[in-house]
Length: 147
Image 1 (cartoon, rainbow, N blue to C red):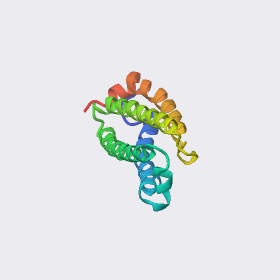
Image 2 (image 1 turned 90 degrees about the vertical axis):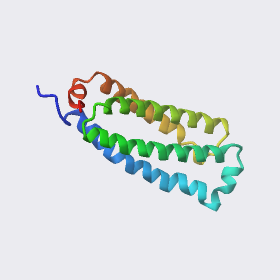
Image 3 (image 1 turned 30 degrees about the vertical axis):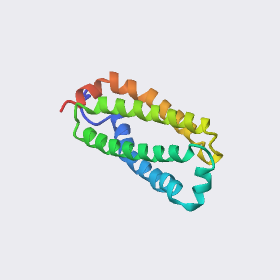
Image 4 (image 1 turned 30 degrees about the horizontal axis):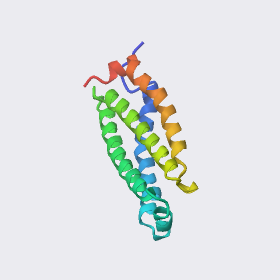
């Protein structure tokens, strides 16, 4: 069985990597930035202690993770040996970041408009629970990412 190449489950990984930066950019443009810049949200942000700081932190983290996704795309399509470790690190850090934000938004008694953080964390946790073991033990990953 020929295992080298961007085939099999790596096709799904590649599709997710190509789509994810667009999804995250959309989140930044339609969620983070309007929340921080629209005067209609000032009362929401400043009426609840610490929510404004958390919103800025979430926006900054999303920008950092967007850059990381773009770099992971480069590593993936060049079949870099650093891709599997980079992807594992990305999944761990993203899941931890979403957990911290979910806990922080809950502790700050965030209004219902900001309670999507738990859903994002759960999706990220499940995603990580599936893909991290794949990147660590898959023979296809080991023989594909060698450059």
